Image 1 (cartoon, rainbow, N blue to C red):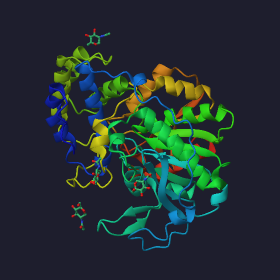
Image 2 (image 1 turned 45 degrees about the vertical axis):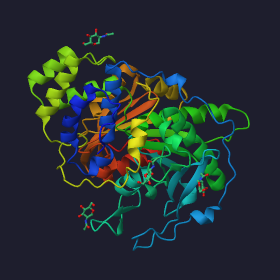
Image 3 (image 1 turned 180 degrees about the vertical axis):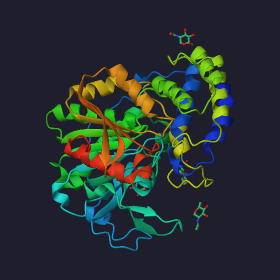
Image 4 (image 1 turned 135 degrees about the vertical axis):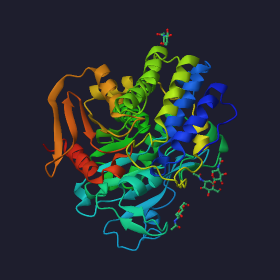
Length: 452
Ligand SMILES: *[C@@H]1O[C@H](CO)[C@@H](O)[C@H](O)[C@H]1NC(C)=O
Ligand SMILES: *[C@@H]1O[C@H](CO)[C@@H](O)[C@H](O)[C@H]1NC(C)=O
Ligand SMILES: *[C@@H]1O[C@H](CO)[C@@H](O)[C@H](O)[C@H]1NC(C)=O
Ligand SMILES: *[C@@H]1O[C@H](CO)[C@@H](O)[C@H](O)[C@H]1NC(C)=O
């Protein structure tokens, strides 16, 4: 848990204790919880009229993306992870790719190939959100990587529904300052935001493909969740525009899938309270006050903040990221190394990703949005509101999808976008519903709607 930075204004401090109360006692989702705080930080900045101009910051683009590879790939090969008792049956690598040689900035990756027929399986990048969440600690270890840590905190076990069963999975920690990614220039930790994160991720990818040349022509997909609702459309659009540039490396981007995406600040927040109300977590009085006082239009008045405070009080100590999950009392959080720097110093973060999503749709890239339906923060409701705004024509009507005759969620196919829900999943869908998540992921890769 962070302590509020001193620069934060009074308005946020009013909310802070309630946030602390509502999320401090959760464990598995501790990794994801900073998104809620990040929203509050952004709202507080709006409230005190400190809105940043996203175009003025950090717009410089490295003139050349390629860097000399300073260590051979074999040095990145993992013989065995610490605590790994079982034989892996697939190749694993981990290491650094320099993304800015001048400042000494490098991103950490963990790569797990598919155990079978890896040469004929696609390459998939996974990105956690936050900002500040570790794709290795959270994505790979907790959610969908081949191994997880046992309760002894020392040994690993194999996950049955690991995503590398169907793809070669590349987990990258972004930006520098998150997880094991770092910079030798401390100033880099204070000059971060969406733009530099995206450019660094692209630079990473280009140089990683130099190191693993057999993947250069492989079908490539980007997946992730939460605040990666920013990173993924941004990175995908950057890849597409750089692919068009002559003498750039052509990345064979085929599609993106984003889970419980944070796509629009106002929509995400409006949906949070609607979700509370529809799930019987707050009173009619609090809900009406929010309806009366909050326009969810970018301006958050004191009256609106008070109404939101009341709602937080009323909903009690429920895990917002998985409302029906038991709350635990383990504050351990190995995946949040240095995240307070990342989080507090974030410079540019567009309030809405809808223009970016529309641009991506028009490129013809496969886009799937999926939602665990027990997450209040980046709720299924917020994604449905976004879909209402996008007004895409429906191609396949809303229907349940199933595994073993049981309804696993619902799916609707729009022109240019597929929306899938996962029943009984919190914010981190593969953690809560591993079998459903793997089925969803396989269907996405095949470009087929999940089974009826
Ligand atoms: C950071 O500095 C260390 C120590 O000088 C050096 O070994 C390392 O290569 C540097 N990292 C990058 C990405 O340049
Ligand atoms: C594992 O780590 C957590 C957090 O540090 C701790 O609470 C728990 O007791 C540890 N479990 C064991 C078996 O050591
Ligand atoms: C935004 O919402 C607030 C609260 O409902 C309202 O007072 C304000 O006029 C709205 N602003 C705009 C620009 O619509
Ligand atoms: C990041 O965390 C590490 C480990 O706690 C610490 O040694 C380092 O100084 C931190 N970096 C910054 C910029 O605070």
